[in-house]
Length: 399
Image (cartoon, rainbow, N blue to C red; front, side, top):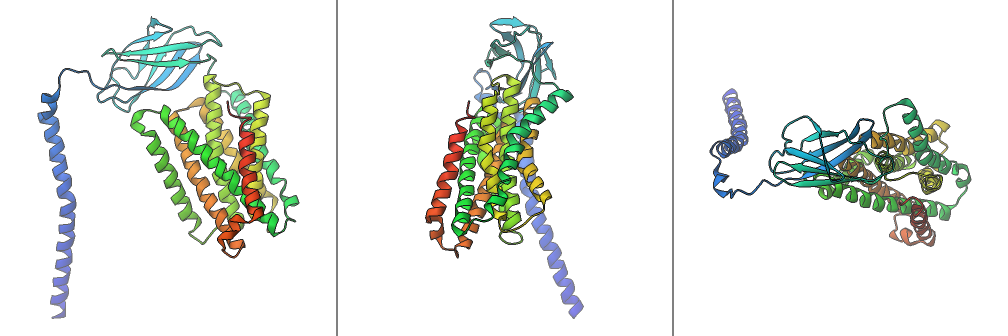
C-alpha cells in the first residue's frame, strides 16, 4: 500500500513537471510561428507608401594617419543602409569600406578616405547614403592618432600615473598625521569623504549622460546609464553586505574601487581628447587634475585610521584607486567609443553611491545610530569642505 501511494505521488510529480515544461514551450512555439508568418507573408507591404527607410549613422572613432582618414561608423536605421558617396570639405573623394556592402542595423564599418589632411586644421566629413541621406562629422583639430608603439604607451602611462596614482598616494601620505584626530575630527573626515564622493557621483552621472547623447540611438544611452548605475550599486551592496556591514579596511577597499572606476572614466576622456586633438593637456591642466584628486587619498584613509595596515596595503589601495586612470587613458586613445565610456562612468557612479551609503552608515554607527550625527557641526563642515574643494579644483580641469 505504501509503495502504491509513493508511485502515485511520483507519477503526479512527473506530470506536473511536464505540464510546467509545456507551458514554457507553448508560448515560445506560438511566438516562433508568428515570426515565421510575419517574415514569409510580409503583411506590412500594404502600409509602405514608397518612402525611404529610416536611416541613422553614428561616427564612433576617427583615425588620422599617413594614409589619410579612417572613420568607424555604426548604422542604426530600420533597414541595412548603403554608403554611396563620401565628402571631405565639400569635395567628393574615393573611399573604401570594410566590410563592404550594406551595413546592418547595429553593425559597424570602417571607411578609409585617402584625404591629405592638414595638421592643426579643421575638416568636415559628410557621408551620403544610397537614399540621399547625409550624415556629417567634424574633425575640430587634425592631429595624428596615437599608434600602438612602446614610446606612446610609456608616455601615456606616465601621464596617467601623474593624474591618477600620484595624487591618491599623496592623499594617503596624510595617514600618520590624521591618526591623532578625536571624535570630532573623525566625523569631519568621514563627512569629507561623503562630500567628495557626492561630487564625484554627480560629476560621473553628468559626464555619462553627456557621452550617452553622442552614442548611437540603439544603445538608448540615458536608459543604459541609469540601469548600469543601479545594477552596479545593487551588486556592490550585495557583495559588501554579504558578511555584514563593511568597516575599516574593507570599507577603504570599496572607496578605492569606486574612485578607481571614476578615474577609469576620466582616463578614457583624456585619452579620447588626445586621440581626437580636441584638447592639449598643458602643465596647468595636468596640475589641476593632480590637485583635484589629492582629496581622494584622504577619503580612502579615513576608515582605517584606527588600524595599522602594512605598507603593501597602502600601495594596493593606491593602485586600485589611481591605476585605472592609466588603463583608461590607453583604451581611450586607441579604442574610444562614447557608449563604452558612458557605461564605465555609470558603473563608477553606482559604485560611488554604494560607498556613500556605507560611509554614512559608519558615521551613524560611530554616533550610536542617531540621525543627528549627520547634522553635527563637524560632520556638516566636512561635507561642505569635501564638496567645495572638489568643485573649486574641478574648475581647473574643465575645458
